[in-house]
Image (cartoon, rainbow, N blue to C red; front, side, top):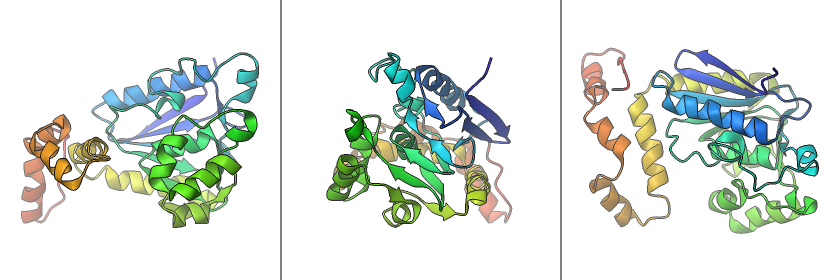
Length: 261
């Protein structure tokens, strides 16, 4: 049976590739499968970082499968654990995810990118939201994230008009971290992932947990909830072996041997 979601373990890094020709569009079955993959990644202590890529050279993902929609699948159907694409609502995933955007990211494909923590994009990549012209709304992350990441008028321009944003502009506006030639997207994502995998995994997870948890708070309230010990991964990090290993390795002038405990 054809599996539209390919996975490969590279040490501490999991590579997840959406491989559903011709446009890597996502129907319910594919979304459920992606959710299973990311839940397994979340629960595997031997995996510390994930890369999400699209197969092929032209399209990262066309988003919601409109042919499946026309055949009866509805946007309010159960898209499985993690919501659309398995990651847009996987709130307890505190491990870092890197999106490797090799080409066009349309609608839900953009929303997968917005759900990632870091983004490497091809200089040929384009991002846009055609939902308004399809009688829909980009509610799997775009309306939630874009007004927080971009000036509100720019976010509304993209959502209302469906204008295509190129990789250079996306980088300038902070939606993309790195822009590279097409053949360097995956190598760059791997370079970043390998760098993260050399850090303490509980530190990476605590950072993501805390940043998510204090979103929208005042600075004073953010300090308060941190001191009130509301973040279990952060508390676990503080008493971990890795928390002691970092300073010890520094003073001994050697690379740390982090174990995730």
